[in-house]
Each structure stands twice: as C-alpha cells, then as structure tokens.
Length: 125
Image 1 (tube, rainbow, N blue to C red):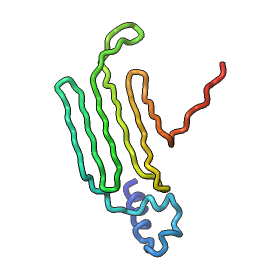
Image 2 (image 1 turned 30 degrees about the vertical axis):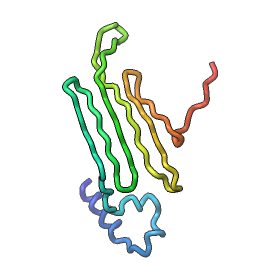
Image 3 (image 1 turned 180 degrees about the vertical axis):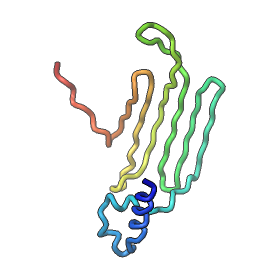
Image 4 (image 1 turned 90 degrees about the vertical axis):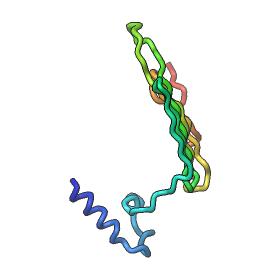
C-alpha cells in the first residue's frame, strides 16, 4: 500500500509545470501544494466538556465550532450525556463566490445547510 502511494506521488511530481493543464482534474489532487497559512486560531474548553474553536487562513477560509455536553433521555427514558455541536465554515469557490455551510450535530443526528447543499423536495405520503 505504501509503495503504491509513493509511486503515485512520484508520478504526480514528475509532471512538468507546463503540462499541468493537460492533467486530468483527479490527478491534479496528487500534486503537492504549499499549505495555507493560518492567520488566526483559538481553542477553549471548560471543565464540563464544552469547547469552542475557530481559525482563519490567509486565503479566507474560516471555521468556527462550539460544543456543549447535554443530558438527553433515550427511548427507555434513561439519561445519557451527549455533545451538542454547532458550527460553520466558509470558503471561496472556483467562481469567486463565498460559500458558507452551517451545521449542527446532536442526539437527532448531523444537519448541515448552505446554498451549495441540495435540499430534498417534500415527500408525499
């Protein structure tokens, strides 16, 4: 497995820069790029298990998230502790439009919404 990965990296690195536009889009992902610099970052946690963090990169990628511990009852009415998470991230797409995704995760599952996330049409019953 490691040999295959190194072979793919070697092939990707062997592509001349002038020929980059001739490379299939999937293969472009193999090309090594300089990672974006993080220009701000923050992380905090509390003694009850809650936390919040955020960061921003030099190219305008932003992310923030917070979590808190909450007690919920299961179907047998037994209490359980869960972490409820809320957050968002944003980035600029290939067309120059800023995309923002808001998300949450709780005892009912993961939920995300944003202009780039398709929504389901209402179902008929």
